Image 1 (cartoon, rainbow, N blue to C red):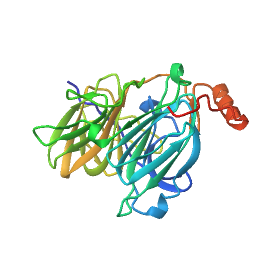
Image 2: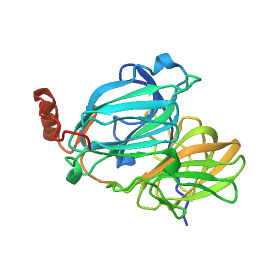
Image 3: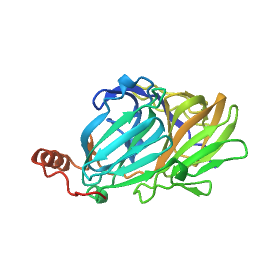
Image 4: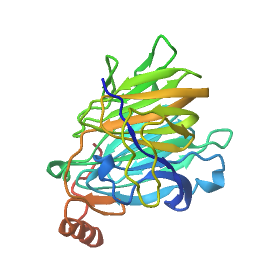
Length: 304
């Protein structure tokens, strides 16, 4: 077994999105090749209603999947297919935009004014860019949960892990999406298939992601570099990007640590991306926006 070295450790950056939602972006809208097949991760945890209630009014998507995971508050949504609903604490909504959909997402805080959650964008391969849109809405009670002998707790949103299978299926990149909690002071190894790209996003507590011995990481402009032979400390809102290996090792701090652990099979395809639409060529991207202007963007109608 080989521990995955830490390639980069990044703090998510404050970002304004939608109609004025204050959130933190872990990655996205740049060179995302090291995250392939994932494109973007937003952390929309906020305790100030004025900073999120304007929400994300009607906007289009094509060529991607959006994965929304809510921890507190609710997200009300609606779309051009006639779907309506709400994502509640512990729930996941996996939307395959495919050939095109227009939708809105409106965050609503809980009684304490908290709105906590994440949205991850997954790319679709060229063969599925124009597939029929669909939803997989998963309630909290349907997400398998595992507690190991040492107290490590894992919610399996997608993929196979520790003999449990997440409820989200039929996704081209065969992602593994886990919500992991490790008890204070505990050291834990978690398997991650070698050929996948993988990252962790810490959202509570902190700890050290341990590295295999190796050379210095290559310096990255604007981000800095680190010695991959030493443990990499990560706290709240830290993104940990892993290199190759078949397991991740973490040493929880005195408050424990909770993080998303996500991996997927790289598509290795060209990306043409502008805003909410991701295609493979600039021509396809231009065609998509021309269709938006002409009213021919939507290829499917009616509730699915």
